[in-house]
Image (cartoon, rainbow, N blue to C red):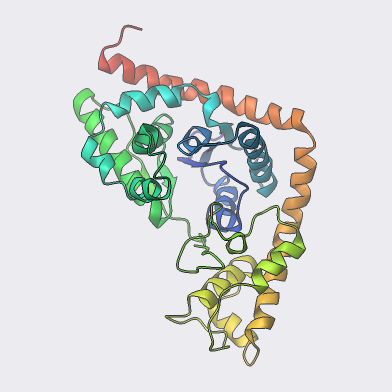
Length: 332
């Protein structure tokens, strides 16, 4: 955070399970490179996680595993903030304030609320409905210039912008209105078992999702079982979702273009290609897993890292929260 002239980029990730290959190639790897260009603020969004019921001991383990995994990927706490959301009380407090400036109809239209309500029909709680207001608070507290987003998150960022503009329209220039940042190298990784859906840590089919901490033999097995098609030709084309996904993954970890991949595997079958993709992923993740093992064994160091970032995040966010409360009319 040493260069205050850099723009502020902010991104959070839920520690609801082990970090996936999709999380790494789609977001975290870009976070690492963004540290040179932006003042980066990252956090584990554990408050968002409890919209779905969690087992306490498992949740605590997931949070520490996610923190160590993301550090192992290359997040540098000397360059960036990387804190735990629930440790910074201003997130929950501003979220309540913003709930009162967010319309019921806006929240009703959120696609993820509809999807998660269908998936967790026995637990459609108020937090599930209002968590976009918490997401807006996450962003607006830090006066972020930009937020790295995928296509599935644009709706939430647009709502954040609407909330910020509504609040600013009433009270003056309180919140910076953030822009979407579309990373140049953000790979959209799909499920290995249903390549029409995004790879997800909550995939019911364990073979559909590769986790950062999977052993090499498990990763290889998952790629060998990946869904493809009957053509047995490695080429990128419409209707070849499975092979397209494998080519995207292979290209993301090797730097090869689709054309180069097609040329390299001309005349070879899907079996050879799946093995090559699996091996390339294993080698990409090997140093990350080694670093994770070192970090997770040193709980004191992990705590030192997140407590330091927690304290700085509290101070930065408190300034924005105090300004918003003054504008609304609270006695401080």
